[in-house]
Amino acid sequence: MKIRPYEKRDFRYVQDICVATSKYAENDNPTNRAVLCSMYCDYYLDFQSDYCYVAVDGNDIPVGYLLCVVDLDQYTDCMQELYLPLVRKLSGSDYYRFVAETKVCERYVRQGYTAHFHINILPDYQRCGLGTQLVQALESKLKEMFVEGLYIVAGQKNTAARAFCEKLGYEDIDYLVGAVVYGKKLFTED
Image 1 (cartoon, helix red, strand yellow):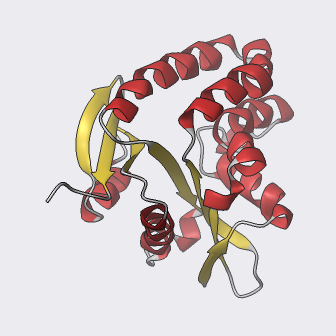
Image 2 (tube, rainbow, N blue to C red):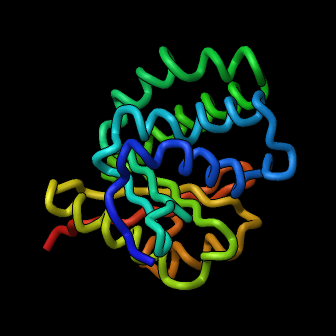
């Protein structure tokens, strides 16, 4: 297993992992896939791929990923213009929930958490250090760019994800309906 930067040839694998690790895993159909990938996958790969990493097996096939956004203004604009119209058409409830969460997240930027990420690893490859390696690769790159801090949202009932965030030094900075927001400053005032 190894960690490497995302490459265009990984696109479908990342989408497959996104669906396989979601609430739609047992109901993978074109509509659910389009909604999920439009909200949590495609923008990152299309516009912020320099901040995306994959964990690959011995055959260089992705088994996990970390997707990050460092330009939240561009993210918000592009999501509204290019990706969310499809989500709204296919699933109004997902659309309105996602838009509400995006508006709330603007406060984290004001607090210095100027980048956000999410991470997914196929179940057979979890708990073997890949997640830690993915986050460390991202944090190293963001420190080189002097990004002040980053955040991630974990489901409130997802105790494994919450423990993972805390193990890596992320602190709970906010609570949303059904979720905990974790943040980490990469630079502190000394």
